[in-house]
Image 1 (cartoon, rainbow, N blue to C red):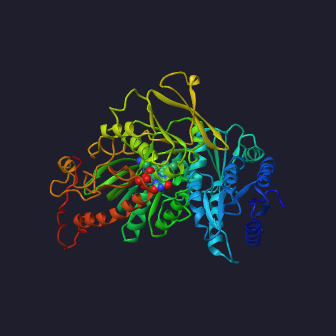
Image 2 (cartoon, rainbow, N blue to C red):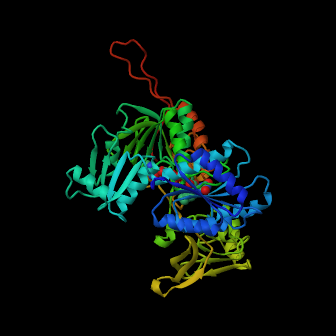
Image 3 (tube, helix red, strand yellow):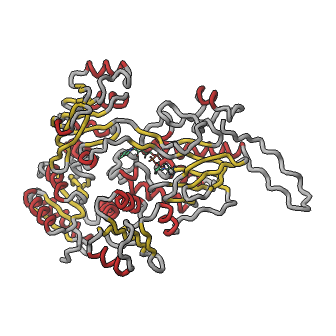
Length: 588
Ligand SMILES: Cc1cc2nc3c(=O)[nH]c(=O)nc-3n(C[C@H](O)[C@H](O)[C@H](O)COP(=O)(O)OP(=O)(O)OC[C@H]3O[C@@H](n4cnc5c(N)ncnc54)[C@H](O)[C@@H]3O)c2cc1C
């Protein structure tokens, strides 16, 4: 078969499963993929190794788990090391409920990405739905095939990486060709570019190719022409800042309920959720869903309902403009609107250690991912951080893990963690605390975290000591993205936006002396905050979406209370003068 055809590989010692899966996959996908069925796991590993050496693309690896094959999960775990980009699925037989806890734990640990029930009849569309979703995710991540945009740059260059990432997260088919590769050289020569400023972006989908040398985000957005700034006289009912789960949910509900809606997104649709390869706890997606998929579907839904989008442009400022708001965009334009929904989320502080970044999702987790805790059973787990969230995560993990070690950079916890949590940590038998300790590196085994390297804070990193660790949870804080908002919008001490009729908001919110703010309204009238950026929010996709849906009813309330002024009468028109609008927009 053609060497460019991707492979679907099955390896199981269970002959019945091998036959059923092989037949099903060949019948449905045989024209587009090569299906390889291996008689056992050792054979499967040898084939994967060979395919890696021959540079063959493996799209999907299937292993089985059940009474007839107890080695399938370990096979899938080790398969990652050969083909990290391949989707890995564990297949179980219907009714084998006894295997479920083991399989769920393995999925939580990243051994496999999805669980599939073996088909027991021809045309099992549930099975094929799972397979085609996995293949769709794989294609999305690969960006193989059609190239709408060709990107030429240096391997390892940060700007090139960011462009590649943000274009593919925005569902723009991008082909990356490193400088010096045959395609890159041919392309540059055909365009007459001898010594271009890298990275070079070639838009292939326009009537004649558009070439951009080291372009800014705004230049790319303008050249793409997908989203154009609205006419200067257009007034939106709502401008949503940020297209993460909360902003997209607002767009869907606001547009479907007749509000004219503009969403401005600085990077890529989906926000933090869009960077997650698998969201396992979003209701309704029992096999989990990739963040990119969830985001793209919500974006498409909002777009078809009439939302206007501005991509690759950031909101840089906000000011009152008579009875309206003026939102300043990074391309120099100003969008006018009656309300603003701030859905800008947070940036998680990262450790910035490349070895650890490579292992995120496979032993390394940012945030208190409670759902991962059961999969830590019997392991030594480390938690980094000195705040209350780190303390709570340690106590939760200690219910499952053999031992939990809290790594604290400073000499004490008493300045950053509540006293009751410190006492609970000290009283918990399988919890240890190491002060004055920083992480300096990590070691993996088959692509999964095996050990971390720690050193005394401030000491030479090469002097460190290795600690075996099956999991590492990093809780070193998050920073809300609010620097563009006026200082007068109330924040909590950590910088999150306060909303609702809290006493402190009412007192500081003299902008609304007559009425308390609506539940998701900030201290500034008509400015709402939702999702992770909101003080007290639960940092989850579903709660962000819930905020996005809820805020729309408050937008209706606010807009009804604050109607737009009637337009001035045309010269010679006998109509009465416009009524004064009972509205007061002030910043303090
Ligand atoms: C790796 C990872 C995995 C996760 N997994 C899960 C999970 O499995 N389950 C779960 O429930 N939760 C998960 N979460 C948490 C979840 O993704 C967040 O709670 C959720 O995305 C918050 O949504 P949001 O819309 O409030 O903000 P965000 O998702 O942070 O989106 C904010 C958006 O605003 C944009 N933006 C910011 N500033 C500006 C500006 N000035 N102008 C224009 N645009 C701007 C950003 O580019 C971003 O796209 C995960 C988070 C991460 C990082």
